[in-house]
Image (cartoon, rainbow, N blue to C red):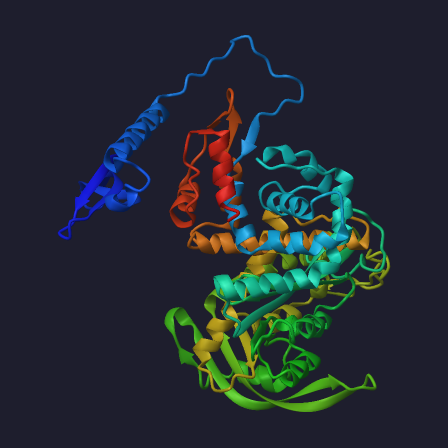
Length: 569
């Protein structure tokens, strides 16, 4: 470092502190200003000789800098042993999650809302632990609490405080999702013209039913009680809101409650709702239109009426695209059945666009997915008494003369010899590879509507992340408010995880990001020094794109606290 003395033509002299550095891009050494001091004539009011004074200051700064460059001396005893229960390992990768948690002002939300509760514990500290750990170390709430020492954070609360906090926070579920939505709009940007909606379910390890845990149609074909969750995301795959429903709720019945809940406060304009065939009902289409929104729903050809099937299979009108992909469309009026105020169904015409396409890839996929059921069906024909619903799911429809006990799912002794239904198989294969999209957006190009619909994969991926990377299932909680709080924490974690992937250029899966940040850990050596032993392309991207340096091998506790503290600003 040097004291730079600048003499101007007007006779005034200006002082600043500079240092030399090598510019890697330009390939030569240059100077940069570290601190601007001021004009000598002004400084003389405080210092008799400003130049001499600040030269001494710079000399002292250079001495301190030289001391910092001296490698620290660490001593240890070769006979030193670990004490039982001692754990020197701590994580620093959570700094990336912390930056987004605070960037979304979640700390402000929890601190402000909990102030009136006058609890002895800090709500924000507990929520921070639960959200961070759901991404990095997903486990039960008890296990998460026991592992809290892995972070460089103060955790002055008990396990009971954690459970009490869950009960306190859940009434704020709507306010939290609304807060996150507004933060996404104001700070990170959110395209709200297109939204995606889907439903999945989560199973419980406790085989007991209550008002929320019900036995229903499980996505994993399990007999356990389940809970339904509807999730709404934006066009970038960032979650907007969610809700939970009893496990025996039909997927289509979750649609109106979700959108009714966000209609006012979320301040959406007209939106196009994209969903799969499970949402394609008369009531949902009617609700969508009455709300002033558009829709893009899928529909199977096999489940369509005669007219729709004939239109799809008719080769006339198809446009051939790359790889044998064919597409065509028509404008038409379709009858939908809407429930009136008396609970009765009435026929209502709706004008919409039908886009039909055939994909060779989808054709091959349908046959491959059916192959397992066909193989099991052939086994049933040979030995039907070995059948039960759990082991031969989806196979019975290809077998004629099957008598099944509706309660147990077991095959009853057949009166007639079962046989494989070739006609059923041939009828299904006629429609392999064909799909239909029905939409209110009659003026949009076919390919644009198709591209919009294909974005539905992002919400499917969100469910995979929630179930896989965040380990949101099985659910171990039993109290209704704790169950809701569990999914709220998973939702917040999913928002941050998806946002983190976006910040890193969508170059890494959430699983890969979580693994790398989890591995970005170090051990306490001596005094205040920590040794870190992991770096990869993810941690490098965190440094380059988020300004969080996770690449230092040695850090003092003060440096670590400074790094973590910077993520909270």
